[in-house]
Image (cartoon, rainbow, N blue to C red; front, side):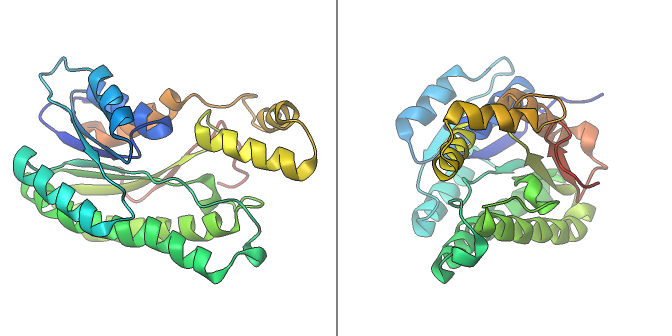
Length: 262
């Protein structure tokens, strides 16, 4: 099975911690040259300096706030001019704040759609020419199992994640003939700062300790535990590889069997 990504360049968003960092490590291990994007320069540099370079890669960082589209555009254009085309894009953005859909302000939906959809479309437009020219592209969206089964108290997130999933499915049908696949990878309960935040929020609402909440959450997963970020990254590494060339337009849960739908 061909998992080799030597000679390929990958843009990993949200790469300073959590799932983004884990995926950057996996892609580098497979030979990709990784461009790490997030806001914190210090954290990005630390991750970059720890990535595998056994295939002669020269990893780089883009310290930019993705909310600032002008700055994001400048950074991407410069990176593409200096380093060359990006072949693999991990579209990974932190989720909206928890809360009931009915309680959310309209502006919360607008802000989330801009963050997750509009900025993603802007990045896509910059990356597509290089992918098309190479005849190789892997667009991987880190979403949520909520695109299959909405999650309680994540009203805005449920809504926006579903929109991105349908955007991705549409792109998959449009871009497949160019050698570009588009897939969504759906993390379940994974040991990341995002999960820590959800546990703390749930504990505050339920008047239970965070330890009690975490234990109950882990027990709800058929395999009986939270995932490690590297386990999620393994799925990303496969979908990014030549071996996954015929897998296109899917939603892949990496959730230990927790999602209650097919």
